[in-house]
Amino acid sequence: MKITEDEIRRIASLANLEPDLKLAGDLNAILDYMDLLGEVETAGVEPSYSPLKVTGQTRPDEPRAGLEAKAVTGIFTFAQDGGLSVPRVLE
Image 1 (cartoon, rainbow, N blue to C red):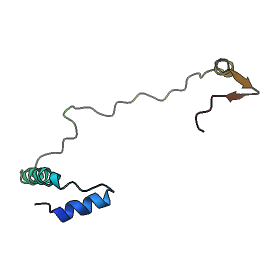
Image 2 (image 1 turned 120 degrees about the horizontal axis):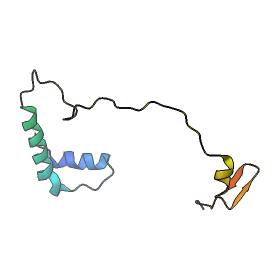
Image 3 (image 1 turned 45 degrees about the horizontal axis):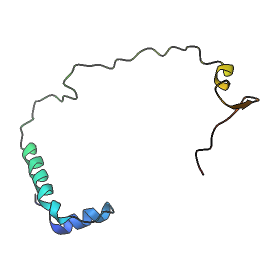
């Protein structure tokens, strides 16, 4: 499958990019390689998502104590009635 200059222009337009016709050779090489991969016989081969036999290893979700409000408000320069003041980050 060869990609044409018109296709490059169309793809660049869809991606809102300037077309670079010098990349046509690179794109064609990539597509040729993908065609080559498509020729590999994979019938009867089980899918492999990871070379490691890892199952879903999770830890139990256990509640634990959080921070006390006084510990949190103590690090702010201004804290009053449960509210916190932080430096402005947006203009």
